[in-house]
Length: 336
Image (cartoon, rainbow, N blue to C red; front, side, top):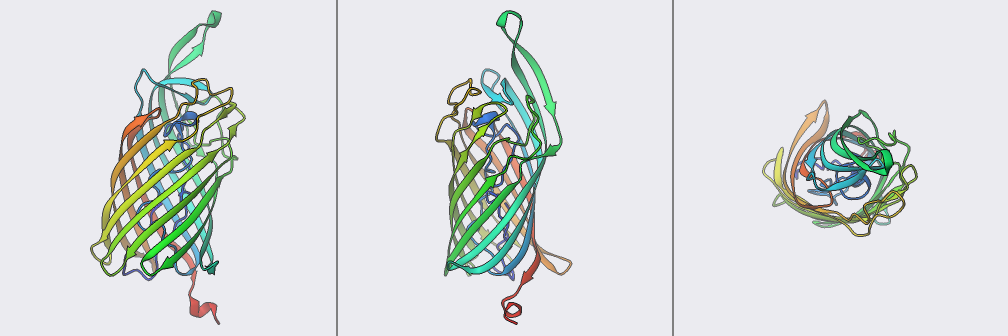
C-alpha cells in the first residue's frame, strides 16, 4: 500500500497490508493462476520504503483505490467460480481500507505494527463458459457478470528494525473467509478459503540524498475452497522499487513485480490440472505530501503494465492511496 517517506516528514506514515496490504488481498477472480486467477497478495503493494516502520506509537490509516483491467486469449481458460471460462475479459475497481496500531517501537528491538484490511470491490467479468449440455456434451456460452460486495477481511502484522539507513521488516497476513462469496458466479472478491502470507522486506532509505531502494519477497500459502473443492497452489511474489525525493512534498520513482505459482492446484475442482501461472510488471510511482487539517498526510499513485503472463490474465493496474495518522503518542508524552 502507499508509503509516504519524505525526508522532511515528521514521521513516516505506515500502512500495513496486508499485504499489503502489506500484502493486501484482492478477489477479482482474475489476477493470477490459482483458483479463478486471483492472488490474495496485492501485487505491487510493496514499493518504496516498504520496510520502513513508523518510529512512533499510535494509530494509522491507509485508504487505497485499486483498478485493474486485463484479459486472457479466447483459446485459453481458467476455472472461475467452478466454471471453466475461456477468453476472460475483466475490470475491477476496489477499495482497501487498512487500520494499523503501533503498540511498541521497542518490541524485540524493533517496531511492532498490528492491523486489519477490509476490501470492497466491483468486479466486471466477460467470458465464454463451458457448460454441460444434453447427453453430456460441452456447450460454450457467452456470459457476463458483475457485482458490488465486501471481500474477506485480512489480519496483518509486521515487525521492523533499523540500522542507520538500512531497514528490515518481517510481515504477514491471514485471509479470513467470511466475506460475501457468490457460489457459481464469475465475479467475486471473496476467496472463500483460508490463506496466509509471509514476507521479508529491506529498504536502503537515505534521507540525506533522498534516495530509497527497496525490495520485498514472500510466499502466499493457500487453502481449500470447500464450495468448489479447489485447493489453490502456493504463490511466490517479488517486488523492487527505486525512488528519489525531489522536495519536501514530492518524490517519484520506478517499481516492478514478479509473480510465480510455485506449487500446482489440486482437488476435485481443479479440472484444468496444476494450472501454474506467472507474470511480471514494470511501473512508475509518485508521492505528494500534504497537510489535512493539522495532520501530515501522503498521497501516492502507482501504475503497472504487466507482461510475460502465463496461465493468468495480463493487463494494466493502478493504485491511488491516502495515508495519515489518526492518533499518535509522542515519546515525551508517553513518558509522563
